[in-house]
Length: 436
Image 1 (cartoon, rainbow, N blue to C red):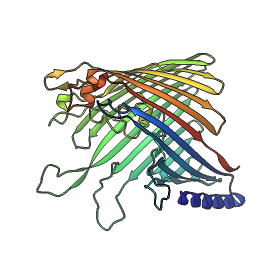
Image 2 (cartoon, rainbow, N blue to C red):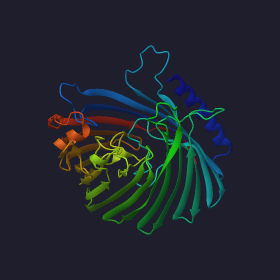
Image 3 (cartoon, rainbow, N blue to C red):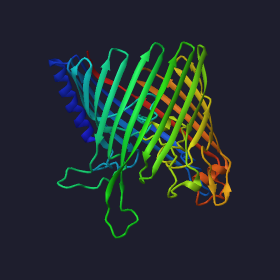
Image 4 (spheres, helix red, strand yellow):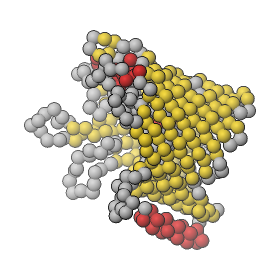
């Protein structure tokens, strides 16, 4: 915390001085976000004879933004902790302090800018690239992006990143749970009430080419997969519609052939002033259990690599949040309902979840139905800078979910347990200084 306070003082002085001299825009802000959670079946079915988890986590951020006619810069320092993980009379922290973002963006011409540094990368609905803002630590990348602007309604990003374990004289094998190298193109154009986005991602993951050979040392190689697709949006006064399709090919992390698909669509109606309801679906292809890891069989499991996956397929994070990679895929049919009355917003989202490929155990093939998840959240916006939220979710699982989550115990009945999760979160976003 001492480092955070010193950083706050330093950035405040630096940006204030810069603001007096040069800036068109200077802003110093912060975020304090404590969240209590009760977990009794979060991310997986709750086993018998276990005790639920209960804790408070907190994110604290200090943000500084500067911009003039030729460039802009942004720094976001953050501390992430669980209440009680450090003693009261502490002399050291538990690695909770980090630089979440630190980037600069220079304007070469009206149509061309370059952004470099550590940054959040967000495109479209966060499905492929997202900030993962729900997680207290969130997601950021070390990358560079060339930004092309064609008028006011069309823009094209070309981004790339290459990662290493450290500065070294010889190659050091990359063992972080991250990509080794990526390149991407993203186009977005607005056409009246419609929008079109196109994305191409070349994703390079490091793997051990000598895996399984005990006579050889770790031999780093890179497996590249390609994700290509697009998204269409329509925003009317009473109706909104979204549709997306992506294909993944190339190689998976085990250097096996990959061929996977993603389809999604949703519509929302705002026919009454305070009430919005909709219908949506997602299809993420999967690989049948009997074909997983089998030589000569393609990996057919789509994975949304760097998206805000908590936003999708139920907030209890049973799918694609550090799990469900290379598995039987998912079909999600959901019905979002939202009511907004002044400063209070209530939302209820039921999800019906199914496997996209056949789940089996030995000679038994299981039905595709995984269960139904109900998500409920209430938000009270006290002011522009302060809000309080609370949520409750429950998973009504099936035997198929038991087999999926507990392959080593497929005959268990954890799916019959009460699997639920509750939380309450306060978000404070004060602005200490702002000049335009």
